[in-house]
Image 1 (cartoon, rainbow, N blue to C red):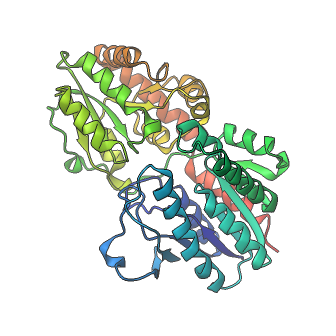
Image 2: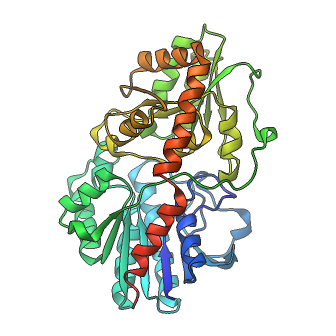
Image 3: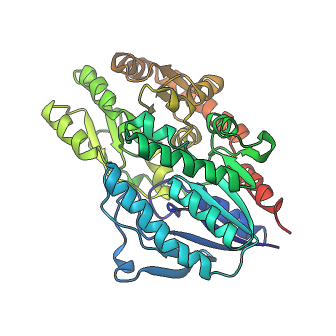
Length: 405
């Protein structure tokens, strides 16, 4: 059995909001008998604050679910601007580096990016510790920064491009989250046989559905269209508000936006200004409560900005929606998510940022709830067949084990 060092700035356990991809993977490594150490941030990405239990301690080491976890310092309260994001990313890597160098020498270092600084950190640690390196790429940089408008400075973009190139050149194996990311990594010069596609998938339930945790200001017969996840620029939730404005006179339909993000305050203010009484907001919820919330949804919303880069997105929420057996309205650029919804027959695909089409899709589902439920059932069958997390985690373990001495 091997000694594995897993570095990711955002490792979420089922007790907290957010995707648990990292935790499932490290849990699978531990279950396979490997000695796993995780280095991650003390700061929860959904709230951008550190729990009070970590106050005054730069690095906290403890055992979580039987796994050795080091939670390192990173700056809090960062926004969507380049400066505060860069400070957050650099502060984590600066704190995580000495922690990584003090651990027992690993057989394999795994680093998951973004942020890109974690990829560089993993590459440097693997080189200094003279060990093998697995790079997981969950987003292409600097392409993502360009698509979202987060970065426009040519020099900064060139630096990021060189950072990505360094990570690719040092990696013994690369894990890509989507087909588009895999193709981008290969286009950047990584041999195709060194890249493995491991998508997100459906998580095994962490407990029974508990309807008492759900708080929505509607009656039991109201048709609820629910979005769950980050309220960021790329999620195009202002398009959802525009669709809700078109539906405000239809008392059957309510839009629930669940989660947090840098645009949430503005979204709440905009909904209030427009008198959108058919829209409600809820804060981020622990991953283990997601099935309970989705059980109250009658349809689920998957929305993105109309940019080619987001055609390659396959977010966690897509698999949560399918696993919950709820029909999906996917207002997304043509690409992987749209193909998955069409292939499964589990929802309606509309053009990204088209509020009229989005509103029309919700009305169609509300008009025929029996057909909507049938779509949801197809989603369960499809996701269990093609995106079972246990099988995906087993593939991840195989990639790491292929590098063990």
